[in-house]
Amino acid sequence: MKISASFLGSSNIPLTLTKLNITDVDYIHVDVMDGKYVLNKTFTFSQFKEIPLYTRKRLDIHLMVLNPLKLIDDYANLNVEFISVHLNILDDIDEVIKKCHDYGIKIGLAVNPSDDVRIVYPYLDKIDLVLLMSVNPGLPGQEFIKTTLTKINTLKDEIKRRKLETLISVDGGINFSNHKLLKDVDIIVSGSTIIKSSDYQEAITKLRQ
Image (tube, rainbow, N blue to C red; front, side, top):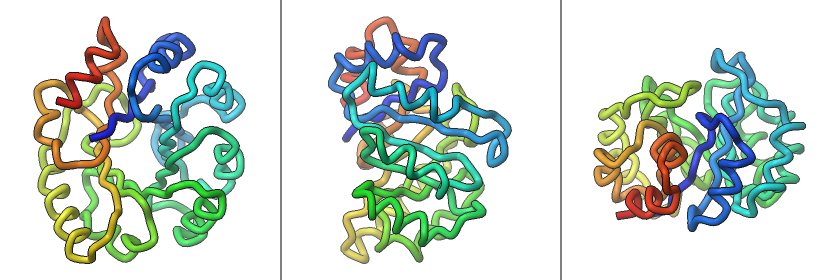
């Protein structure tokens, strides 16, 4: 299992990123919000583009925006492994998938807690990752929604049935009490559990166990 660390709840992002850089965390999870898809709004790209000043880790970008197409050109210039978008957006999903792949970036589709996981089935053979939201998108520090576990099993069965290599990532409310329930997923996204701990590496190691 790989770990993607979110800094959404950080009060000092440069320091948080610097501390994460010296751990063995696999990715830095970057939540981008436009204040339209979700109520909250995060920094602009002019601020996010400074992330590589503090970490060499690959980035896992989560675009909670209505129009991701116009942002991909910017974020593609960073050290990006994944870009994930939601299905209920204004841009054409196939165009988003193509644009990411044209840049050599892996593309993910995010599934909200209220969504039926089967909404991604038409795209499973075109994408690299499904990002299952185990909290409602937009706010840090929420509790894990347990129905996500059923979605994981349903999705894994479909991926296996089709003999695909699509990855499953789970984002939200993951802590030391529930992380073992997710041992069969490919990536877990964790924010507060890591960045509010006194020892980032110890927290990351414990989440892997």
